[in-house]
Image (cartoon, rainbow, N blue to C red):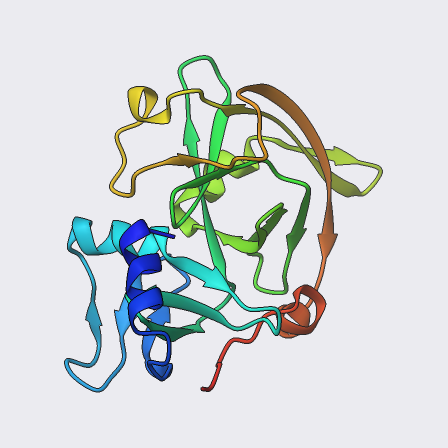
Length: 205
């Protein structure tokens, strides 16, 4: 969380939280849903990066954006994280959340709609639809089932490798380097996601 946000919280600790005005779409976009202007997708890079740095979750599974001293709960169209895959020239990939956090996959799933979902140390997330082709490159059939074999990079200085709209940030728990991951693909029902992975799609104040 930004230092200025911590300072604002210290100065105004009792600002009421709000809900119902910010939504995370299945494409990783932030959509204003109320009160005005409704249906507007946030596109300003500075605002997007501010939201990204100050996006977090409570123990009860409600995700929020800490907007200075005020907590704004986020409605989730699908999952609390949307993952992107960025290929590197050496054949490895960088796995990144919609907020710019670099991660490594721990488990992978597919739902009844054929969508890919990835679990990492930050949580469960939907793979962005435009990255499905790259993801499919790592799929290997194994006795009627599928596993995903991939080589993932955690770059030391991501900004030197990738020019992205959201500034990439290293997860403090990860060491820079190349990692091989082999994950079985488990089938699940998308309706089971909130309970199984402990998040609330439609939080209330």
